[in-house]
Length: 122
Image 1 (cartoon, helix red, strand yellow):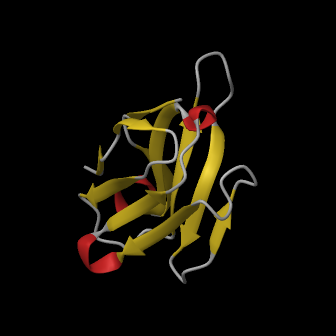
Image 2 (cartoon, one colour):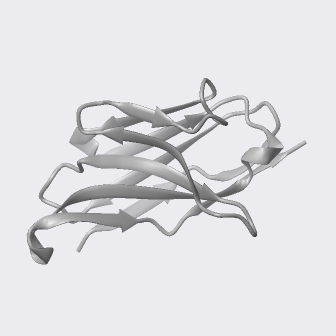
């Protein structure tokens, strides 16, 4: 079974930094895509950042130049370095990966983590 384990969330003051980590286990394949989404109360879930197996990255305009996504394929881990945090960054952050699932086809399948709370105080 594929599992995503997130860590690194917490409470930080505005202007501070956090680094989120997401470790993927239970797959024989390197994820095609790894990314982070977030959802604030009463709002839609939105893409924060995404990185492909080739290293191509995408960022939401609201976090561009402040957040950096990276991945370590040897550790099956994706990171989100968050700098210059703002109160509006407060949300539950979800890790998502897209990988080839032998049990389901094989075919590409999305997997989600449970989410980790990030709270930025003013």
